[in-house]
Length: 168
Image 1: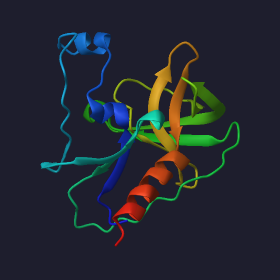
Image 2 (image 1 turned 90 degrees about the vertical axis):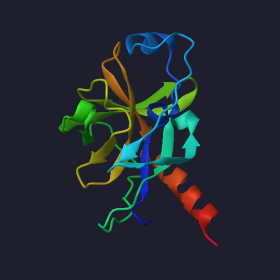
Image 3 (image 1 turned 180 degrees about the horizontal axis):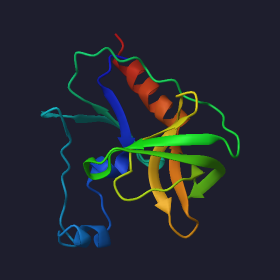
Image 4 (image 1 turned 30 degrees about the horizontal axis):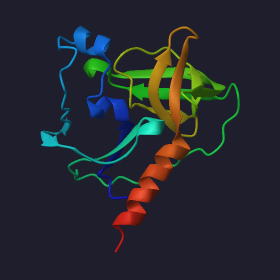
């Protein structure tokens, strides 16, 4: 990878918010939202999505830094220590938590983590103690007090599918 690809939560870049969220943000119930993402003053482009896993692959303006492809953790054990790096509303947050297990949502497989979270964490990476990507923060189940993450293997698959489709 050339360091220009970023994985985030699909719902962050889709504009597909439920009516209550639209109202809370000051929009009308029927307003169609268009999301634009910028990094370093340059607009990012959504290039591939996996709606079922709540993942989006973005191409961002390249930086002068050389970035290497992330390492992904393929299997995980209950009670494994994890951490999340987030920038909700511009704040810099590192949260520590524990893997709880599989989590089914609308017939799809996610993972659950016991970690403190709030609005603005969606799309943030979740790592193990070796710096491998475990998943991407997707949401929070307030009733069960659990963070819901898309498994890193789904993010890895999204990147690999894009890479194989763009090779000559």
